[in-house]
Amino acid sequence: MAAFGASVLTQKGLNLIAKAQAGQAAIKFTKAAAGDGTYADGESLAGLTELKSKVQEMPINEVLVVNENTVYLKFVISNMTDYLQLARGYYVKEIGIYAQDPDEGEILYAVAVAVNEQWDYMPAYNGLHAATILMEFYTEVCNTSCVQIVSAQGIYALQEDFDQLRQAFEALISLDGIVESYKKVFSAEVPEDSSMSSEDIAESIAYPWNGESTASTDAMTAVEVNESIAYPWNGESSDSPTAMNKDEVAEAIQ
Image (cartoon, rainbow, N blue to C red; front, side, top):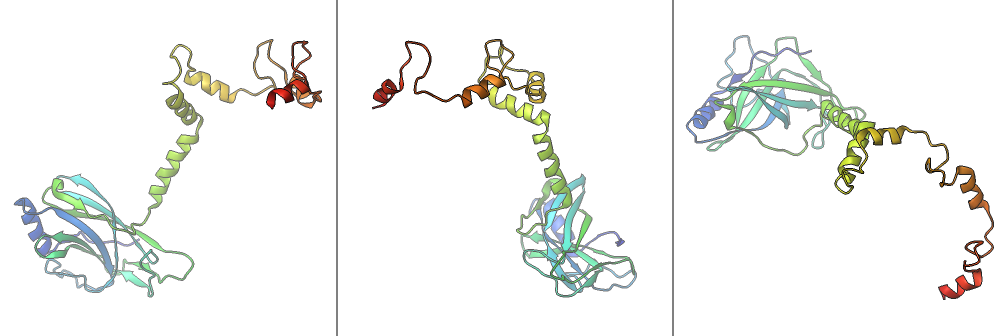
């Protein structure tokens, strides 16, 4: 796993913070970028206006507040996205975060450089499987209330996003979820004194059917239901002398 030094604000990033403190701007993070530029030990990063050797750019998935003056950014480096298929592999040696300056446009806001020889390798896309690296980046701001993230197309769906969706789906289709869904749909339409409780609904769902429609002595059993289905109809609706025969039924239909 790669190891990176602490992120460093560029001079343009510091200028943007000063504008935000004066109420002249908000800090709008626009994207991240990765490259394979090499840096000497102790080399100053504040004067950078661009990564030394930028290879690819990617949208920022999430910005979270850590404390009043620090934010956490999360993004994914991948060799295959909707807008890029990486043609050559490279070692991820530098990471940049970009922001929108109201006067200068998009600027390199902060930079982090990987520790020498402790780099992650991003291979070229082989046409079969995408490789991904999840990046977590901490940087300073003037005040977290002035931070914004610019929405972008092509944001990579993280595994944890899928996990959260799966957990929500499993909760929905669980017995408790069915009970709660049933109650939300029907409880408002059924008188309170006659509506089923969640325990009643759960018990009904779990109760094995013995072939009868109810425990009432007047209800037909499964055998009686099957006999009725199999019984040949003679055209009459009932054995009762008051029932209509088939001719009367046909005449009534006409």
